[in-house]
Every structure is written in structure tokens, then in C-alpha cells.
Length: 305
View 1 (tube, rainbow, N blue to C red):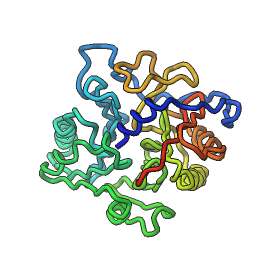
View 2: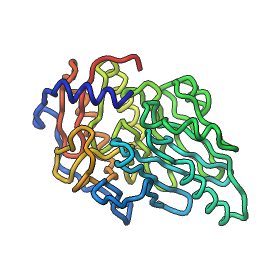
View 3: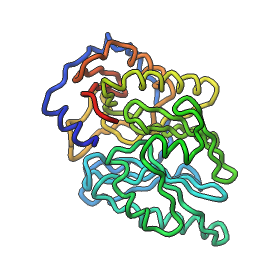
């Protein structure tokens, strides 16, 4: 579980790899996709879930840090025939009513057609799958399994993790990119319509945890992702958390109850190359902390997945 890993890290104290040794690039301007400030725990009256739309068929949800310190982001994408939700939230969330309301509103705009819902996961750590049971009880919903074989079978990835699958929501064809490293079943989702990359916990403005026994997998995933990015325009990478402040290289403390002066969710595509370069450094032991402006690579002890 990601929460337990973070707690162990916080208890152990982290060695730090200086920015100069981290292939640290000059700061890149971040794109701006969201008109509103995200809920960040600094206002006691904030909603349990905030929603912002990227267009009429694409919605980004954020769980309040008041309900869970992870404050994850979830992504709901509609096509003509079906809808895809990426991640179901952390403990403390009530995501189903929000998703139901969004589907009902979308349905009303499309002649009353209610699309079936698919719930997939950026990866299978607990803060991304905690509401799966509630979605399994929801009519018209398929929840994708949590093992690499489950993900590969559902999306049609023939050679995991080397192949990239195409998944059609109906007039909206997505690319499903296996990215094991942070976790064995990790994927990214690329939407060519909006040119966005849903990058999960592999790339986001925060602490990017890499188990030392899966470092080779993470490096290989970033190599494949960089190759994909060279031939597919990416406006922004949108990850699953924000743990960085607006000050370059500065993150919040573990389990911070609020995120004042929070980094944007959006990361420019240049951060793919920066992460790839950072992973090439000597990261052969737990508790190494490699600081970049927009993220921090943190190695953690070996784990099963």
C-alpha cells in the first residue's frame, strides 16, 4: 500500500541526491488547463470532491485532502458509446454520487443515452482503488482487475508491457501505455483529442516513489514513453497527486493536512525527458531523494509489486 510505504519513508529519513547530480533541467513553463484553483485543504468549507471540465466530454475530479491526505485526482472521459473513469479514489471518498451526477448530465445532453461505465486504474495502490467495491455494486459498470494480466486482457495489450493498446470509447480512441515501475500494473492513458497524458503516480508534481527492485522496469517504461512522446503531441501530463509547492524543488511534508501555495497539476511534456534522465542516475539503494523543480524521485525498499 502506498500509504504504508510513505510512512516507512517518513520514519526512516531520506538521503538526498543534490539537484546538480540529478540531470536537473532549467524550469519549464507549465501549461494552464484549469480555470479554477484546486481544493487544497486551506478552506474548511471546501467540497468533498471538486470537478473541473476540460471539455464537454472530459472531467477531472479531486478528492479533498480533508477526507484523505493523498487528495488524489481521478479522470472521467466520455465517448459516444461508453465512459472511462481512471481510478476510484482513496479511503474516505464518496466518488460514485459525483460520477453518477456527471453521467446523468452528460446523458441529458445526449438524448437520454446512458453510457456503460468502465473503471480502470492508473495502478493498483490503495489510494487509487478504495472505492472499487462501490462501483462494482453500480449497475452498468465494469471494474478492471488489478493485476498486470487483468489490465492487459481487458485493454488488449498483447505483449505486456511493450505493446501499446488502442481503446475506443466510441469516436474517441485512447492509447493505453503500460508503465510498470512504481507499481507492476501501472498504465498511462493518452487522449489525442485533447493531447493530454494521464500519467498516474509515474509522473506528477510530487514524490515519485520507485522500488529499487523495479528501477529497471521504471527506466524501460520511461524509455518507451519518451519514444511515444516523440511521435504524439502532448500538451500536458496530468498525474494523480500534487505534493509540490510553487517553490522549485520544495514538497509538502508527509501527510500534510493542507497544501498552501500548491504546484499546478499540469506538467509540460519536457518533464518526461527530465524524469527519464533522472532515472539513469545511480539509484541503487532505498531512501535516495533526487530533487528536481517539478518532482522528486524517491527510492524505496523492494516490494512484491
